[in-house]
Amino acid sequence: MAAAHLGLPVVDADTMGRAYPEAQMTSVAVGGLVPHPCALYDPRGIEAIVTKVPSWKWMERASRKICVEMGSIASTSKAPRTGREVKDWGIHFTTTKAIRIGRAVEAANRRHDDPIAALLKSEGGKKLFTGKIVDVARRTTEGFLRGSALVEGSDADRGDRLKLSFQNEWIVAWRGDQPVAMSPDLICVLDSVNGHGVGTETVRYGQRVTVVALPAPDVLTSPRGLEFVGPRAFGYDLDFRSLFSPAEAGA
Image (tube, rainbow, N blue to C red):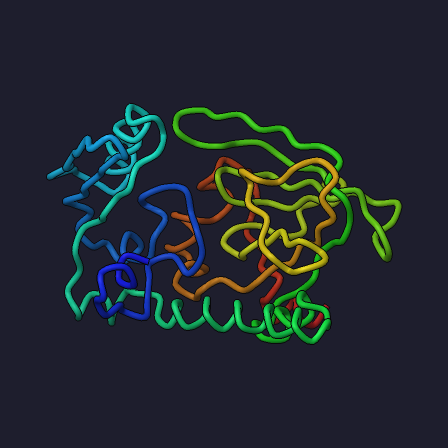
């Protein structure tokens, strides 16, 4: 977005391949790259720069406190990266992936086809659940939006319920007391009609939604990657099981 406004070229890569809530939940942190400096800016013109920290988790703690003081809304620019670092530790082609997803969904809508089926075909995803949001519990704590949403099943999922736990982003999907999808696999809540994404801050009672999962970048599903973004990084006592592992794919 910044590049588009400023007329600058943009690198077709990022450090998450999705969205995560904490500073250390990135491929460059997994790679052990330097976390500082970090600049923060808010709509009132308050500026702050964290010049040095001993670790990525300390960068998260320091910058989060600043963000909370800014009213929990701040723009941020993370530590600059060399071309070599981006080649080695960036998650490549994520900008074109986002464009591809948008085009697939919008083209399906124009043809009056199923946009969610078009998304799953484009990205190799899996449909988890379809239904209506019947309960949302949200609270803001320490600069995070935490809580859960409950989906009552319809169509093939009628009579069942799916619970979605979140920390800014969707982290674990539970069917009954069994986790059926979890970070770093990407859990997406989509409007069942138009296929548009529904975020944790906008989900509300009565919405008709379809929950799907998309595969995570390999760097985040590695043993070291799971230390940063696996379910235990969010406080869940779960061993990560990917919906896209060979064993699950053959199940």
